[in-house]
Length: 618
Image (spheres, rainbow, N blue to C red):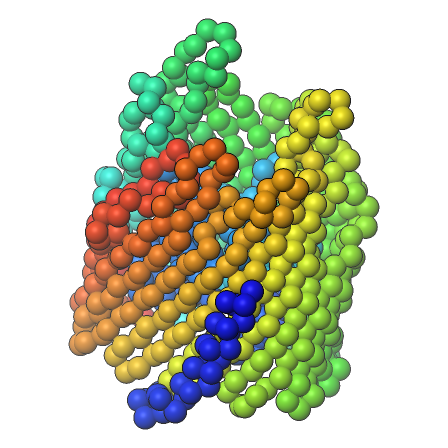
């Protein structure tokens, strides 16, 4: 902790001198970035008392991200595991927490598997995404279960220009990868719609290190997707909108067949068929100058049919209803309140002891400004069918050191509900489990100038009742609330945009410590201590050239398995704008062909190359 304190102090002193250093460089006006992920209402990033990152469609295209995980790993304090390339199981960690402790929403609808407890990021097509907002730190006081590490809000494509504007892109790359996306944005005076369809197919790589004969081939992946967002404004008080995202795919993977039970058969053509869907409707009504109310209905589905030595089908569905009210008490004081109702259902080839459960959550939040001080507080009560009531809260005090520099301190609690697998899986579920709980302290500083944006954050998150397999009094191994963790860290974020040159940098040092009995405070498995990202782009005439570094520290994998080595990846990219509407892009990923393993037993891509043709009517 002494190291962290010294680093924070030294970094803060440095950052307070930055304005004097760069004052003469540029006087370019930078439009403020807006988010709604932190407090459910739109706020400027600079005014938000939390660590927030926003990546929009322009950045997705300029940096030519190949997947959602490719995008997310550039965010401070985000690491991931992947089981062998594109389309393979991917887990996202924020600030050293488990992948099932990150809440994900698509167009405002909670998504994820109710049995596994995590989101299949690998199946969400990057070509269908308009914008991603990430808040780092607990937000259960507004969103409920899972928001221990943070919240990721994903929005599908939505255009803003008037008229009918088609768009399209086509990509060809390594491993015989083809990807295409076509669609259009339509907007009139009172109505708007965006329709987009996309497809991807790749031969992939040999995903795992298994050496059975059927597991030595390449493991391909393909998906097809469609998204639709549309809305209509009836008058200056009433808006309605709807959204649809539907993804179907086929994933080849390697599977351990020889477990030492009975006759052994090396199963050929092991694969799974997946289907993901998100449907939503939204009604927004401005009752008067002070009160705005929103009603949302949504359904998300996660379906998978696996064809291996033991074929299985598992389908989960999440139905939600939410009501959100924003009341402006005064120009600088707002009250946000509401409730949400959620029903999770499980069907398939496995018969769970229970296949349905509900959760009802009530929440309220106050946001106020008193001169140089900002004050925020939130409280939420969840009534869950399985474990009863759970109360979480958040309190934050902010202080404006100058017009450009904001400091804040926050305290928050969060929880994660046990999954259906934890509770009700036949012969191994434990219906007596309690939710995982966390308690987080955080301080932050952020500055936004005409020439430089920066952030410095420090956090201390204690997580208790972590669910892990353990032996009970009868000698049976069951999911149990037996683990504890403490994760401390700092984040430094810098970014600058000049006439023709833009760069951004972030560095995270974290200490993800296992504090469970008998663990001797070992590092949490698959959680690196250090993460670094650096990206820069330079534009000249019709050309833009750029590059990115991504570096990770080593990862502990367990008591009896070797650590995974740290690595540094370098990507380079170039864009040539033929016309204002048509461009050609090239990308060389992992240019130095560095070995980068994120999960024991699985390979990752080496050097890959990509060419993209992109068109968008202006």
